[in-house]
Length: 294
Image (tube, rainbow, N blue to C red; front, side, top):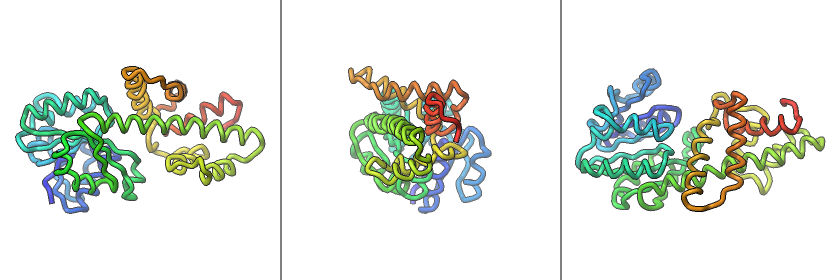
């Protein structure tokens, strides 16, 4: 049993806290809106009034927020996580953010005698509930070894990939494939549908074929009916695609399929679909192909 903290109690963060509580850990939490934390408090989570208070009360503090600016908001300032860190404590950030920002934050944590791991995840709330979430970890190897069992309480597969920031590089590299796969899947479904094959039949064949990745098996049916709420919306996916394209630019790697997929996310946003699951790029392409809404 460990004395843990968690900052950022959105859909994923809340489910992670559920898993940590179920394994007997004491958890102190904070979220910008307290209402989202009330269900967790009913299950035994303690409430703190600031990220600093969470870090002060905890041996290990987890954080999971939407982007680099949100991570900066909870980490910096007199009420931020950094202000609550001290010698021997560990910050594990599970957000998908800029690798360079994460490395800078890790350096600042070490200035306070603490340490930090970046530990983004692959999978959504369904895979998390099913115990199938994968965790990638970057940072000092010795810190990873100390934290490994805690991370296994969240995800079934925990992989050390290297120094700080490299887990984020791995996550971004993985996520760009999701958007590209969704575009290719959409093209294939539309060819089948416009040739006279019912969309339901085409989806069934695709999701049981050699082309069926786990992502397509989960998201393929979304071209029949989008989930409400979204599992991973257009804005969040585009954030990751822009991080990927920036890494490609820095490393001189041409990324044509990522660039095209990103443009369709922009088109979805222009149509007011920013909060829909990113599978909605199918609807954008279908409209361009003259296919009416299913």
